[in-house]
Amino acid sequence: MKNTLKNLSITGFVASTFFVAPAVSAADLFNLTISSYGSIADDANPFNAAARSVIDTAVGELETQINSNFPDIDLDPFTKSTAKAAGVSPSGVGIDYASDFGFGYIAANIAIASGATVGEIKDLATPPADLTKIGKVGLGGSIALTLGLSFKHLPKIPVFGDIFEPSRTRGYLSFYKGGKEFASEDATQPSFAITNSIFSAHGQYKLVEGMSVGLGTFKWGGVDVSGGLRYSKSAVSLSQPLSGLSSTALDLGGGLGNVTAEFTGDAVVSVNTSTFSIPLEVSTSTRLLHVLGLFLGTGLDLNFGSAKSGLSIASPVTFENNLISGVTAQADANLNATGKPTFTNLKYFAGVQFEILAIAISAQFTGSLLDSGKAINVGAKLFW
Image (cartoon, rainbow, N blue to C red; front, side, top):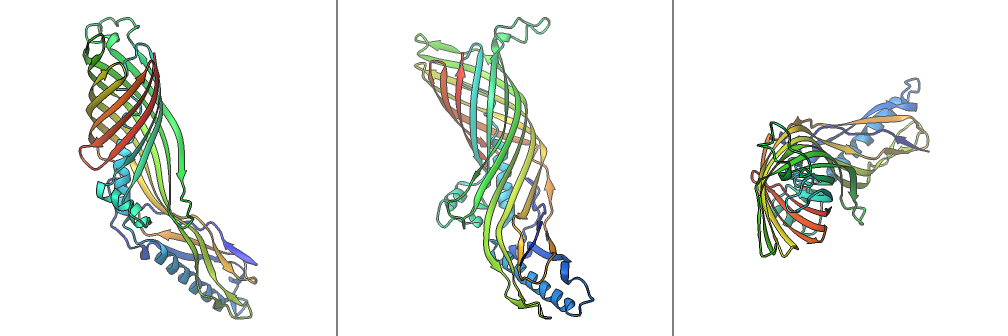
């Protein structure tokens, strides 16, 4: 009879987004301990004490197997890199810098971000792929559905009419909640998963009016200032398969036969971020032949929030023996850290947009001026 050590979980915060615990060797990460010996817990049977000692030895061997097969990575770079990605991925998904709409606007945007350096990304692309390499390349992403409205048809507000011109003003609301897992076709290779949610409200004011020449053949969009409030959450995880790990067959004594502790499952490193941001941006744009648009800008995000990182094993341990039952265990990881994001994030962005009548496709690159965070954002838009 196969008895399962259920609810085996390793939970520990290993590093925060911007405050990181000291690196620990993978050989020291996992500690397995027996919490109940089940049917061999009773000392009335003189052979049970010896059997419990054998169980301890088997679990110790399995612990060594798990630690030695988990890549000896430094978790700090993964956490830092993911934090950088989270800092830039929401930028630009909830606001428009190039479209010339006079009433309404609907858009869907998706951004993929990384906090890795160019060298780390090149190293990841060099076979073989393993968690040691992936652990340096934190990834992030954002998806948003955006509704926009031009205020040009609204009346001027008394008192504010001289400094607030509705015809120069736009408002945007964005929202989304979802996730995606990217699993390798090779079950022995690491997989990646991300969940994302976002809600934002932005306002945009045309500080300097634009101009056009040649019946609109070339148009300069003027200078826009944008700002708002944005709340975003993301969870990024890397899963490393650990398969076929087991202790040697040990004799329990007392006629109980041999026992082997076995494990097949995934070790998961995860980073969770929650950020409230106040973006402030300045941008400009041009449009050629009513089709091709270019835009660029710079900005500052004021960030408030928190981050947590964790390590877990997602699978039970089993005992190969048909005469014992009810044995349970618990596990611990010896890292624990929390932190908060950097308060400011200076950034720049540039993009291109192709328009056909009231439909547009855009692509935008955003980069941090303070770290290696970078993002690519693609959007589809309908406006009128």
